[in-house]
Image 1: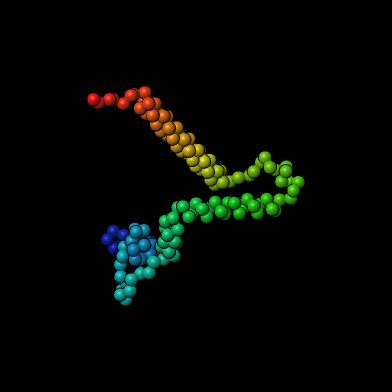
Image 2 (image 1 turned 90 degrees about the vertical axis):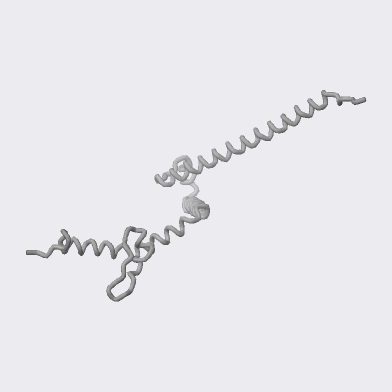
Length: 152
């Protein structure tokens, strides 16, 4: 009769143990759902390549402004390289049609949204300044109309 460990077969226990080891050790492995356990020799399990990759991704995502700037620079560089690589005649023919990936389309949409928001913000700022100037002008007119009260 096969040996059963707590209702699990040996192969299931082995698979679970391998899954725990794949998650890695330390804080990164614990965050990934693993447990921080000590090996029989007394050493702590080192984080695996998945944990290192997660750590790199997390540290890169800490500065979204920098990430956006780098993406914009990369996109600009790609455009300039594409323009330089294209012959003069083809550039004129294909000027109206640009093949784009869904990612490029999403970036363009996001860029348009940002531009729209910037223009809206500028318009609101102009309206606010105009309202303040109008209010100041009306205040000045009111003060000019009312004669100072003479006290005897």
